[in-house]
Length: 294
Image 1 (cartoon, rainbow, N blue to C red):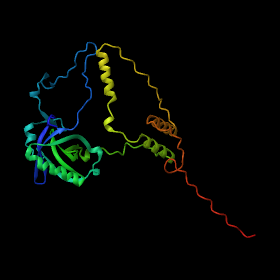
Image 2 (cartoon, rainbow, N blue to C red):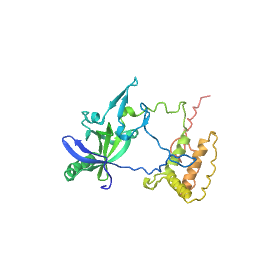
Image 3 (spheres, rainbow, N blue to C red):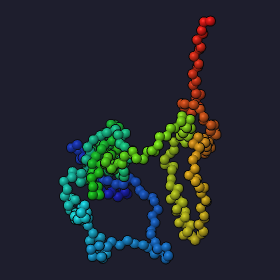
Image 4 (cartoon, one colour):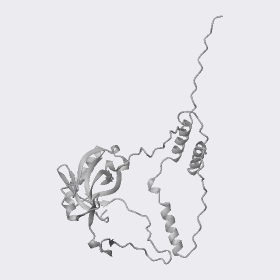
C-alpha cells in the first residue's frame, strides 16, 4: 500500500492510546470522463470564474470562502478561521464507542478509506486495536474532521488492515415513508414461492467476477471512432408500452431462463399452495357426520 498517496495524516485516539496513522482512499474511480466541446468545431468549452462586483475573471489565489446569510449578506470565512476552531477531531480520529456491525444502517455508509500505521512506533498500538476489533467482533464508531467538516466514521478490520467508512450523520438520512407504494398490495403465496425459486436459482455470485459492461462498451466505441471505422448502429429496443404484465408468467419464465443460463434443468411451473415451493398443500379432513336416532 506504500504506492497509494495519503490524503490526511493524524492519529487514532483509543482512550489514552494515540496511534499515528495515514489516511488513504480505499477505492478508485474507473469511470471514463468526457470533455464538453463545441459541436460545430470541436473546440473545448471552459468555465471561467468571474467576480460579479467587478465583472472580471479572477485567479484561484483571489478566491475565498463566504457564508451567505438569510438576508443575502455574505460573511467571509478564512482557512485560518476554520483551523482555529476548538475541535478535538481536527487531527484525530476519536473513537467514541464500539458496537455490533449490524447496528450500522448501510444507508449511512459513505466513502471508504484505509488507515495505515505512520511509522514504526505506531505498529504496536495499531496491531493492538486491529486484534481487539477482531476479537470483539465489533466495529468502532469515531468522529473525525476532513475537508472542512466534522464527520462520523466506522472502523473495521479488512484482512490485516483497519479500514474506515465515512458515515452520514443520522439526520442526513431521509425517511422512506413517502417512497413506499401508496395503495395496499397483496402478494400471494404462489408468487412468493416462485420468487423464492428464482432467488435459489440465481444463487450467489463471486463479486470479483463482476465488471463494468458499460465502460467496456464506451472504450470500444472510442477506439472504433479513433480508428475511423463506422460505428455499428444499436439494436432497436422493444417498447414495453407500459402494459401490465402477468406476474406469475413473468416469474415462471424468469426461473426457466435463469436455470437455462446456469445449466440446470428447466423449471417446472410452481403453482403450489402455501409454503415452500414444491411442497404439497395440506388439506383438512372433513369432520364425521353425527348420526341421529330415528
